[in-house]
Length: 500
Ligand code: HEM
Image (cartoon, rainbow, N blue to C red; front, side, top):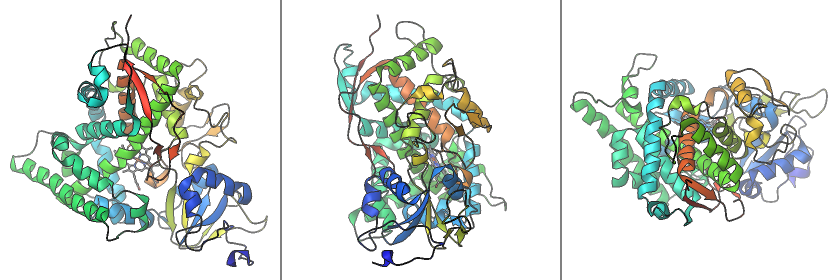
């Protein structure tokens, strides 16, 4: 009933709910995009809803993205929101368990470990892993039987989750992790991953099996990475020039080297940050490609043009090549527009924050103020499908990223270089005030973007080279109950490519 009483007019409008504490959790949890769209119709771009006792103020549109992602970290803190979920998984002294300045240093350490040289080496490794998977995994028996007329099928999420962890461990995680993937590391990962759910976010500790397994897996995994570091040191330094050895060479600004457990926990954070994001992005991409034979053909012809040596033979891809494949590039960009894995980006408000009137205001001469203690939430997932910005917003149409000739995703390249671009349906600009932000923006922007494009692009190209694809079911709905939006259970049909 308190919702019907007159409220302080500087507070953003409150979304009506029936059950105290629970608030709008069911509607938000079921389909956040539909929930935000409905609330926006009633309240405009800024409103507050109750999420299991928390007051969450949503700021929508490019200006809403700017409000949340461009705010000062002393006023809008990511760690206060994410730490309950991530600290037990990543471990001590990294990411959201440290002051923001230290996180910035840790992000820089990883960034300098992801050099061009490494990216060059990764493409071949990823291709090899994908081909190895096709040749050995029982899912692809039909492929292995060499029968070009028979169709098989595979479970979309399961397959791409497996391929992603194999390719990420072979590249980012280093040789020892890849070698142990079949010998127990995968189990540890699985136990840790079961702690990466909305339940574990809302309740940091409960006397449940999944919490016990999460904590045990974290301890074992941390020790595993640390033992690799010790072994490498004991053998007089490793030949491996991977992220772990690069981290071991770095220094904090005060001159201190990273301790073994910090390196271990950064590696776990990278494993987790890249796994669901990349695997769901690959799954969505391949589902769209399977549904659109004309795009699958365009992707295949692009491979033939750039790498073809006749009879289904291709030269190996190189990192530089990936930048020259506009169809592949557009297919991934467009998939990330419709299916960014992270639908809600949140920060905790540390001191009362006025809302810019250009975003929303109660009247011409007053402003909304978001009180300290609220959580603010931006949703690029919504601005990326907003019909006010995008023509045929709901349609998966990679061609929207091509230039006029379909020759290159010129527009996006300019976007990447930081200049404003007119796509013909509105401006998309780099920075925090943009409708297209699948990798976030500002201080907490993703450091994995280039790697993700490399990984998803190489997996998709390697599969399109070898398989014809078909979708024999309605396009799957998004599953919002997981931490990252992934397709509901779905199968893609495939057969070995036919070469005349
Ligand atoms: C941050 C998306 C892959 C590491 C973020 C954020 C988004 C995002 C939206 C911002 C979160 C926020 O502001 O609260 C994605 C997508 C990916 C992807 C869509 C793949 C398609 C990766 C990979 C890695 C990675 C492969 C590791 C190599 C990180 C890190 C942060 C981050 C370290 C910074 C967190 C912070 O500063 O608070 N990512 N990511 N991501 N991502 Fe990614």
